[in-house]
Length: 454
Image (cartoon, rainbow, N blue to C red):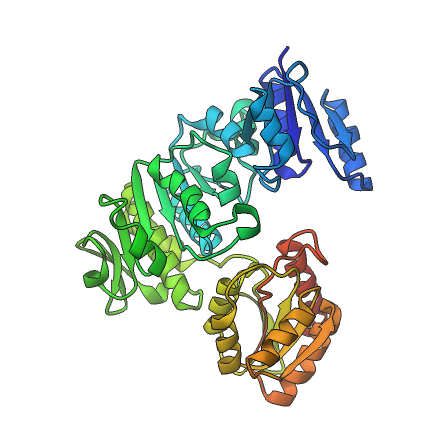
């Protein structure tokens, strides 16, 4: 029996381990952690015949492992993985493993710096409204290996018609053979440079997905993509919120006179989408264009868009207290996403920001703060750094409150004082200093707001 070694005991790693076991591998999973939750998982998987090593780091050995499967959070260039490849041990990502089982099913792969999750959720909603079994997966919804396992074992579940996969650069770089039927590139701005080092390398990884796709959808309003991708993919379909004349090659989806058009077809009014912000009009265009390229009819598209509720943690409206709206934008983990979030809400706003700071250009974000924020409440390890930057840029209406609990209480007070319209959590940071992920951070914000709103 061949030996497979899975790194990471998160959702993706567990799904990969179970799929490999199903395929006849002897499976070992390793994780550097050793928490009570991981120990419980260790017992659960042991009962399924899967070995789990906790507090453990990979030590490549071709005699003991013929394949290594890596969860998305594990750096692809980590020295043990480099060593494993040098020793000839096949090393792949969890998404690549799933692709090998599911490549007979058409995929839509959505990538980009920002906008991936909303676009993926919109596409999945359209396909499901049209009657397809087309779950969202990858960075949203299911781990892709969960779908592969379900397809192989669950006779009660309908067969998959399409796979709608949100794919990060981490997943793409570890998945060399993924070739979706349709690839969507939402935006491109600097992010994850601590992992990918250069903007060019980050771009190259994202571009890999499109190079292997049959049909391409690209955001024509994104300056970097417009400059770099037009000549690279002359056959691509583009999107523009500012009319057909601004499609780089004349083919694709666009907005004119308040309506979404694809080619010569006028499909639906932009107002049908209940989500705020110009960026969501762009997400709408990309989703509708992908659906049309897949042959989905206008009726199903219009119905799906009209009933789409939005995405948790992305400009999620939680409720109103004394005329003050509370909005959860915890998924805004970089400056560009946070600037888009703040730009999308009514002014004056009380902004809650901070967390685990990332590299990037904060000047546009701070300019938007100066224009729209009556006050900024800073949390997490980034708080002193952000305070210094705001001072340098001439903005002094900030307070360091450190925790989310203090931030929500203080935001309610300041909201009343400034007669603000909105309290917005839009952190411009990763969450790992205080939370396991952005979802946990957003859930905590929601719980605290609910105490006020009840």
